[in-house]
Image 1 (spheres, helix red, strand yellow):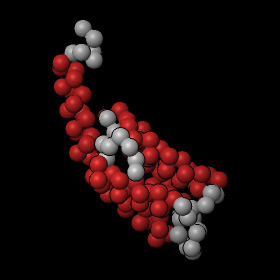
Image 2: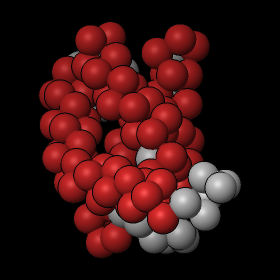
Image 3: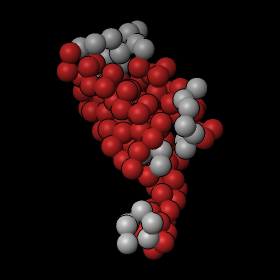
Image 4: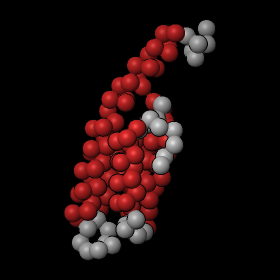
Length: 121
């Protein structure tokens, strides 16, 4: 029997998806806290936050980007990946930090409405 048609497999997958869904609000709160730490550590308008604060934000976004699609949250994962890459360029190349907080805020607001939505708006 093919795994995708096996009822037990489908039930286990649905349970894992539900378990992941239950963690999304807490994860988004951690991302909000990491963003707040980045904002607090930025020394001046447009200045980059501390390396430690950026690293924390990057790690959280990376975790969402890597797992969300697996559990039925493809758009959440794609948007987290896009922002994660922006944070990475701030960390590694000294790219402009200024547009990043608004992108994270937008992700957080969207996820609060419906993190499983298939369109990011």
